[in-house]
Length: 320
Image 1 (spheres, rainbow, N blue to C red):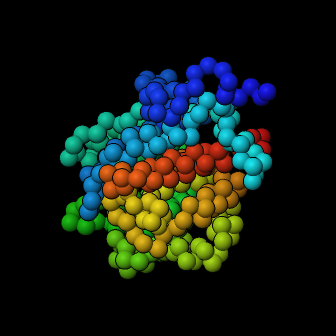
Image 2 (tube, helix red, strand yellow):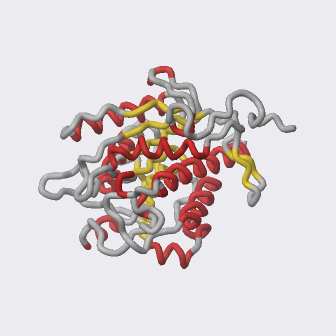
């Protein structure tokens, strides 16, 4: 019988134990991270313009991730005939950045410190928000990492420059990213309906090199052609807003928008991107668990992250 952990040691069911991400080891000392992937919680939602609650996103996604953390090493996918995230892919959870209530600048600085610590350790940073403003410190942390291209999967463009003096809210992150000399471009997928960004924001984004596609445009293209719009050879940072998905499957978010993606549409795009590009960082944001008593939104978020990590490391091993 295969030695995959089903028959030995603790059974360790999902509802047993402490809810780190995927039940992976917790590392409290950010100076001693030794892993392939390090997960950081960014429970900040003071950048939200309507319904708060994404501060509980990291806790909710961690809890949901235990569903996919039985004792065996890796997950076998019979469609791909591949074992994803085998035991030699080292994932750790470094806890949460400290959040100082009402202080965006200090809270963002603490998030940036966490991402920098992960990068300094040579690990892939995965940040769980929090509202989408937490992407700003995540991108700031890449200022010494070389050029990156941002892939955004989202209902909203998030390209507001400044509104009533606000420059670091959840409507601003893609504009702030576009200003970085090391961000070479943005591919923005799922943008639809009434957005937080006015027409001049779309004009500005396109003038700065953004490639903007709605859900219907992505569907017409298909996952392979959509992924191929990212420049060849780009090092890609992926930011996923859970409101990119249709609220029929992801109601637990502050700004739901109907007409969104379904699960496999996003999964297949991510698989194409992971197989063709070097993924250098990930954040997943805007999960607000209290708006979804079924828990399906947090489960979706955890499943997307774990599958994406599986695709990334499968591709790295295949290309090694």
